[in-house]
Image 1 (cartoon, rainbow, N blue to C red):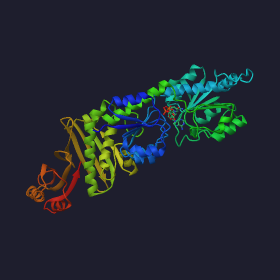
Image 2 (cartoon, protein in one colour):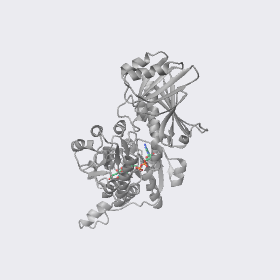
Image 3 (spheres, helix red, strand yellow):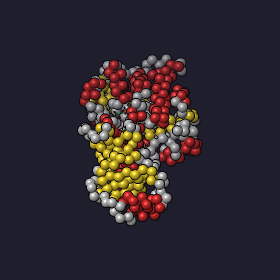
Image 4 (cartoon, rainbow, N blue to C red):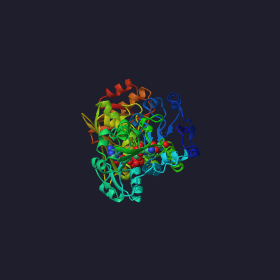
Length: 530
Ligand SMILES: NC(=O)c1ccc[n+]([C@@H]2O[C@H](COP(=O)([O-])OP(=O)(O)OC[C@H]3O[C@@H](n4cnc5c(N)ncnc54)[C@H](O)[C@@H]3O)[C@@H](O)[C@H]2O)c1
Ligand SMILES: O=C(O)CC[C@@H](O)C(=O)O
């Protein structure tokens, strides 16, 4: 394996570079590059580590020919075109917990700053004015805090606010009653939160569903004198609508760490005395930056070196312990998928349904990555650059139904995977096992037992089980100068359908295939490549 190369494109703790290098990965730090500069060099890297400044766009990804992973040292991935990355088979991973406490603390700090006008009071005091009467605050004790988005950060904010003896109400469509009870928050719907909260704090990701969540209509439903805190993403609030509500006095104040356009150097909200602003500092503590840098460097190194996948947005997880155990299964599933796919494409075209069955030891494994590997093999003949990241999406986009079946029954083999592909005309199944625990081996084709290793070039022939086939078949290949490396036969019953699977040393040319197909007793012949 060539040494993987990672580009660190945003300012990350030096600990990240140390981790990459100690794991034998080449790491270049090039921050502040213009998009064109980044596009010019990205083709040389297997991994890209970013924070929020670098925009990982479809244009950038189009130049990233060898890129396998984008690592976000932080939580929000809205600066990464995850759809484009997935389509190109690039894993996108983040560090979901590393800066959560720090960001929650920033939200609490902003709440205090807002309630006691600390930034303005500080500026005034330092300017030599002693304006004791100008800065009348509001107490937090007993106030109702409305938390919108009660995930990692929102729930830490709720916990801290409860410690301050505030009443916490929360709106999050995915918050269960049990979790709300555990957190000590009251679960409410959005209109009720707007109607009851004295202070509202936002902790949702920026998605199409949450963009412009706080607009003029939403603000009109809030209490007069409400205060709003945003430590999540700028696009959650319509800034003009917030400015209008600040002007009218309906909103008593706002504290904003994030803005619609960043870096925010000129924003109409800056002119309000009762607006506290910080430059996207939510995650900016030494502790959080150390956490996310270490975590992303470890995760990216694990993936590039061992295939382990943690905290990926667009791929199932594979733990570092599982990765070596799953590796031979992934090869088995990819090859079985490729076998079934090549057979079906060659004969019928489009796939309707794929069923992947796991039996014996395989039944106890983490199936999601194995199914993704099977789909990548299956779609290989149809798509360029298909891999475990983009195959499940590609299958969905092509309307292919994917079913996983785990058999809790004794298996003839210690471990078995069977892949069946249904087209408009037929269903074809291929099963395989791991020989000696690690070598993928075919054990059944269309219900007929046959034992064969996968090889680079193979020829799969179905024929009538009658004397004379093998001699003629061997002669055709021999006349064409094609050496048979291995030959495996199977049949459904004496004199019935039979199969012959050979591995050969080079691809079988079309003219030889035509000669094989023309032989008496031959039903079909399909070249296969693995
Ligand atoms: N200011 C900063 O520096 C900073 C730092 C870290 C994270 N963030 C932002 O904070 C966000 C939240 O981070 P997190 O770690 O808590 O994420 P999380 O995924 O743990 O929590 C997000 C929560 O939002 C909920 N949610 C989704 N859609 C919703 C909707 N329409 N209404 C209400 N709730 C909804 C989800 O169910 C989830 O529980 C991140 O997406 C990121 O954008 C900002
Ligand atoms: O990297 C940062 O400074 C901000 C990170 C933050 O926005 C996040 O989503 O994790």
